[in-house]
Image (cartoon, rainbow, N blue to C red; front, side):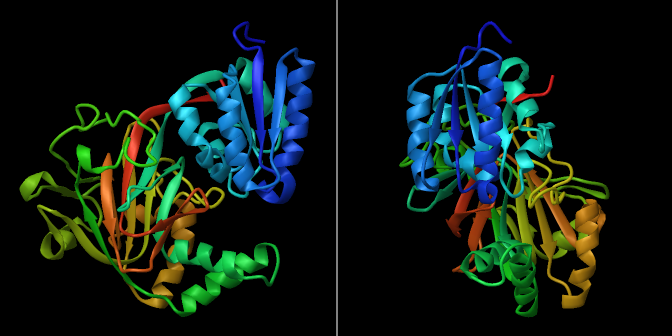
Length: 365
């Protein structure tokens, strides 16, 4: 055990993974105490109480905060954790567990995951914020989505039947039947427009690639990445990658990108939904958001994209646009709700920002 780790706070979300979070917590606490750590457990009755207890756990100034739950639990308690600088160890107990997948944290071995709180490596990783126009700021740690996938999540939450995985599959089918295209607009964001440190904000340093520091002035440029480089466009917005030629002809200008599509994902990590590589080239330590936009196409042609997305090869197709940027404002039709880490982040328009290496995560050495 590391000599610097003695006091560990274990935060449990009993709602995660239909009880998997609580089960993993029991194993983790037993392991940590057996190894000589002083452990205090914070377990609420529901997700809201978990958030309040997360603040209490951070205020106690432990050496490490261990979260037993899923990606949504992590993001819900991220505000006070980031401000404190206390390392986070994760006992995966959610539905998707994509943060753990990204960083090699054991998914099915709570004892091994708990060991990382004591002697795992400390890795600085990116986090993200979603800022509404009213100044409300929410955190996320994996991927934000808006479109077919977020509508499917929304419908699943409204449905009471069937139960289990069948409910999600039913929601996918129903949304596919009423498939809608969305007029997405991605706008460059100045450093003082992202809402960082504003109402509900975390006070995070906004610095990152393309920024000079908190409140950096000027416009953060969007750059698309991939083969078939088309070169920089007017105004510093690069249109590079699959689909770039079509964008140059129809939608990319100096003020941003406008494009019709079915799905939009903005990722810090490569996967969402339990390992689906929607942003296969994302680097969780580069201070950048990886944007993947699946353009409008025929209903049955979209079905063929399912296997491509699961293989991570969809970004090689001309029907997919990829962009990389530290911050972006998303505008889309009214009523479209964004989701991140499997949780609702609120309706568009929103501003999304990556915060470079803002979280210390306990990971395998």
